[in-house]
Image (cartoon, rainbow, N blue to C red):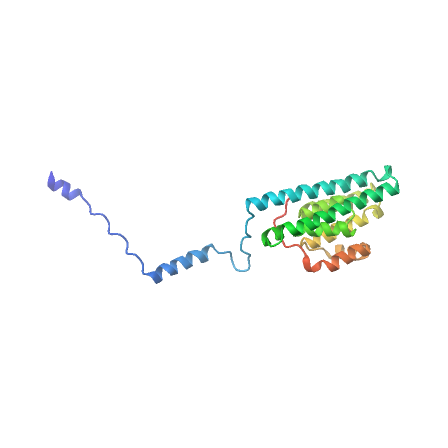
Amino acid sequence: MAAAARASYKAPAAPAPTPPPVERHRSQAAAAASSAPPAGEEAPRAELSAIDLALRKNIEDQLERLISQLEDLEGLRDELTDEEYDATKADTLAQLQEFQASLDKSSQGNMTLQSELDATRLALRSAISGAFKTPEVIRMFANKQPAALRRRLAEVDRDVKLGKISFEDVAVQASEILVALKKLGESLSAKEESFLQAHMSQTLSAFEEVEDAESVSRLPPTM
């Protein structure tokens, strides 16, 4: 019995030798290299903290309220006198300016949050300067929605071809969409570039040129 037990017993395998420090460092370096992004690709962006996420949500809510206010004003344009319309719009633009100042202050020194809000700041400037006059376009621009802007542009083109709206009624909006797409880093076709140069207003042209150095960095868009 004892002999049989000794025969079936197997000694545990000897532990693998611990690699020298230099070899360990090489292994760690290799592991780090395998997890690094491929050459030519950007490393993942720093994630926002819970506080920054809450702040961004608050900013988005305030911006949506002001854009809706502009949208409601345009919808009531025919029911208001020129004085009422001008006074209400001036008040809304003043609120946008105050919001912009608050936005700049709240994100000061926070590069990650500033990057997240690049499109919001540019959209605010476009509205305050009068470069963009279409609330719907301002909203999609601020929310970094190039796909939605493309869909809206296709809808405008379709409605013009079907005779539902006149080209003159939507030329300004189409120009705003194209400028917003450029600011979001989207490429325009030669036909779109030609249209833009022919139809954008002086204010929109000035906005495109002055703000080119601050074009929005590419971030995953919301759909």
